[in-house]
Amino acid sequence: MPHAHTPADAVQLLTPDGERKHHPDYPLDLTDDQLLGLYESMVRARRIDAEGVLLQRQGELALWPSLLGQEAAQIGSALALDDEDHVFPSYRDHGVALARQVDPLDLFALFRGTTNGGWDPREHNFHLYTLVIGAQTLHATGYAMGVAKDGADTAVIVYFGDGATSQGDVSEAFNFAALNDAPVVFFCQNNQWAISEPTEKQSRVPIHRRAAGFGFPGILVDGNDVLACLAVTRQALRRARSGQGPTLIEAFTYRMGAHTTSDDPSRYRDAEEVRAWERKDPITRLRAHLLADGRADEEYLARVDRESEEAARAVRAAVRSMAAPPAEAMFGHVYADGHALVAEEAAQFAAYTAALATAEGA
Image 1 (cartoon, helix red, strand yellow):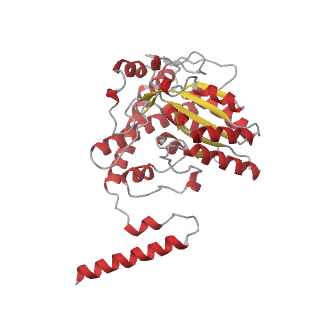
Image 2 (cartoon, rainbow, N blue to C red):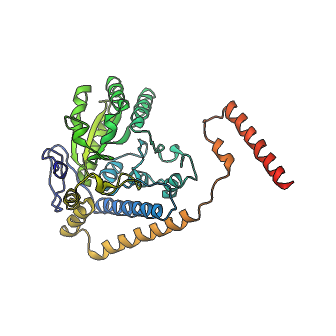
Image 3 (cartoon, rainbow, N blue to C red):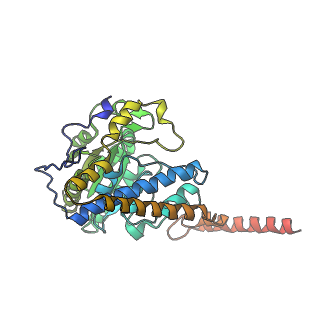
């Protein structure tokens, strides 16, 4: 089971048993509140994500891509960001969205089909989900080049999976970012499976080593270690903001669930592989550390679970009561400042629906 072993050279600050380690290149000193915040964010993300799977099974959502198993990679990296930094997600990055204070209902509306976008990217510097595999790496690189030309002291991070690295867009983004010293962090969540294709059928070398061929550093991190993901991403963002160019982070993690709710992973991967990764669960390892270090007790853990359950229950009720938007809403937000052709099509549609209404009335 090649997928079941985290490489020994991956940056790790917290073992699967919850033992704290120190890394000379990635020091990390967190307060109790910061540690507890990491734990609470991961638990909440997992529970909200589980609600997405349940709602899809009940026919309330068309589709849901679960983040189960990737909470540490997403929360650790997201909480390394400054408010002014910009995020370009793929379509599974619900934990990052929640960490950026995006309303979870905006995520669910997208997969319920009541919106074509979901949220204003300017509100939290969190751009729209991208379902075209790998395309967001070019969006992020271009945006990073723009903020650099504007002289802004900000960084950009873009999330994608191991499967996206097989797309030409990603190689183009790497090259543009390197040549222009773009302040962008490429954060690859290597969850071992691009739908049913394993990593070894996509790349002959570890993903993070590809960065060297483009002229910038690549780092391998234990993607189930929230502390390591935080420390590594924080350093890469500092490097970007200081004008030193891009960094590729490969977070070695595992997709515990299906690719999406339309997928059956039992058809292509071994159950023992899944069980091996269950023993590396990101939430379990941080919980073990908090208990062993005396930073949390069972009462606290129960309260976090209870609050997460309450949040999921509120989401469930709100999703079920979401009203379908009026049909003419499809013409809104196509262009930032409007467009003559879209306005003409909207007018034609309005006239058509009015004619139907008149005919039905007659």
